[in-house]
Length: 132
Image (cartoon, rainbow, N blue to C red; front, side, top):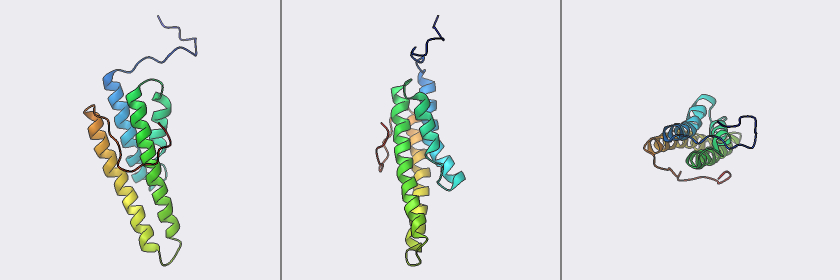
């Protein structure tokens, strides 16, 4: 029987199904939040999943970190697009950047979730590495 009073006791290992499910959620949380919040909350879901599972499962840790890093990159692209909306001349560029960031977030998140559902790791094409 595990000692639940010991805070230094390791977390129980995740089953392969739980690991895949958590990784899928990490990849889909970003696009869902991006659509709902116009891109502003897309980094929260992958970050929460990474924080909860980083010590429990290496696959989930890696995939949640990849999802967070990619969503952070797309978040920054949409911020740059939003800043460009303030200028009169660069409004079309800002709109294009915001649309590209949203579409990349949704499409890549879905592709990643499909790959992870098959048990394959997914690496995003563009990302700033912050978490690992």
